[in-house]
Length: 133
Image 1 (cartoon, rainbow, N blue to C red):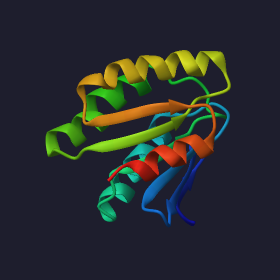
Image 2 (cartoon, rainbow, N blue to C red):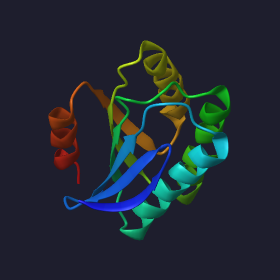
Image 3 (cartoon, rainbow, N blue to C red):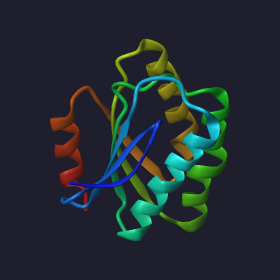
């Protein structure tokens, strides 16, 4: 795997099987750094014409309301507007509050171009991604 981008929010890796591996770091985030992280995620996906990502959120802190709104109103909305379909295998956070905030984001994303599944472990998430076109 090749590192594409890294900041305090996490790391983005190019997986040789044709998907983005999005690894969230533990700890608090500032909003501009979070926006940069997801913007680079979009750029990585589009650069390779990939439509799949594995988001490892096990260490992630809960999304803030500002982050959730930005994901819904900008990040997911821009993919939907462009007709860019996304598939996300999400490894759920260990923190119960992060799980709750993830559920809110997933509820917000139901009308978007993102098709996702939640997983407890990476092997099952990878298996699901490999079954997709």
